[in-house]
Length: 187
Image (tube, rainbow, N blue to C red):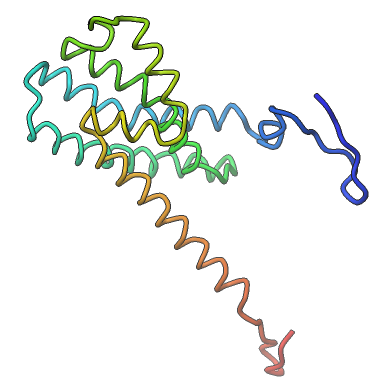
């Protein structure tokens, strides 16, 4: 790993793995990413397996409702564990796991309907789909094809909304002047 010396900060790591060197609990982050991926995509895959080649709008609505609900339940359950371990990036890890593994789970869901791994392109096309889903934005196109676009959008927008609420609370509590109770003066 390349290191660069700075004037006031000492040395810091640079390079492709510099981001991962800042993560204090990488195993916990990966565990939460897997939990987020499984909680979001397993209802989608289960509904695709159940529907087979007869996927209708009722199935799409079930995916749209069930996937965000299971993701939210997993988040609530994991939040207690994350607080106990002092892990501060739970939502980010879970959402990142959902985005990054989307191509894999969409391929599994497509296989249930006779395409995906069983389609004309088979494994080659499926591997290309999985690899391309790591590119930001591609997962939304794949989710639109799969029928889970609204569910993925709801989870993403919901997470951004909660992040904005927490940030505004933090700004309001940090920015407010504190007063001395005895004299009524600002500290």
